[in-house]
Amino acid sequence: MRILAFRHVPFEGVGLIAETLEGVQIDYADLYLDPPVRPDPAGYDALIVLGGPMSANDDLPFLYAEVEIIADAIARQQPVLGICLGAQLLARALGGGVRRNAAPEIGWFPVQLTEAGREDPLLGQVSDPFDVFHWHNDTFDLPPGATHLASSEACGNQAYRAEKLLYGFQFHPEVTPEMIADWCTQDVNCGDVCELKTPLDPHKHASQMRVNSRQIFRSWINLVHNRD
Image (cartoon, rainbow, N blue to C red):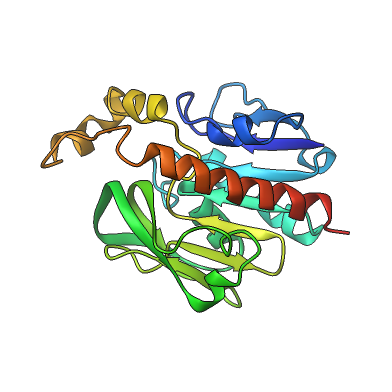
């Protein structure tokens, strides 16, 4: 099985996804580079669209290109998993909007499942509520026809499913403690870090999140494998 992951900065990779999906080939598409690294998405079993420090509303050519690529994937019924920025780009491809959240959500916060979320093939097996890591200033509006799966106190739209193969998570189930620590040192994140009232603890809920994330990603790859 081959998965293509769209990366937006070098320090936001697949993290726990690679740890969980042993034996699955994961390649990166880096459209933000000059020249871009752009494997043919049609040659892969599924797409993952990762996070990044930019806004989905930014006037960046590679983001426009990704929305078109996601729309093409939807048209050919290819599974797509969007995380944070990726969930927002997927929402745009599905006809939804992206806007500023009422307040930034950065750190460890619990997510509550909706009734549909508790019955969902990916989220239905995890604890409810469950603590996950967040780092976002924007949020998506629920795309037309999508199923609302989860929310948090600071952000009403935390997860959705569209059709059977399209998932968007506003939170970051893929991060490792090492990734969180690294994000805090990146220049592009310094503004967010300076506004935090207390320093981030990369390990605070990492063990439990790893358990839940492995369940989510295993369920996702099973869904991809059995989609026909």
